Amino acid sequence: MQIENGAAHKKNEIPWYDSETICLITLIFLYFVFFFGISGISVVREYHEYYKHIWVPVLLMIMSGITIISITLRLIGRFFQHIKNSQQ
Image (cartoon, rainbow, N blue to C red; front, side, top):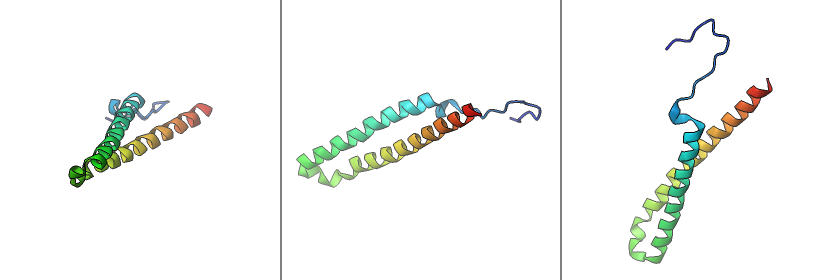
């Protein structure tokens, strides 16, 4: 898709899967995954025969935590970009 040269307002369009609504829904889901990992670690502490499987909830927590941070930084950047654009 080519950009028109004479367009007065060129706005970057965000795909639907990267919209603010979908990002917020994803954040909510990832918080549930993170807390599910915490509950998995508490189960491993209670039942020592499951200790060799502690990597599963730890991996869930790490992956969801990294994604939570990434999406949060993206939304913060968009928020400040929106404020910067509205002041001009």
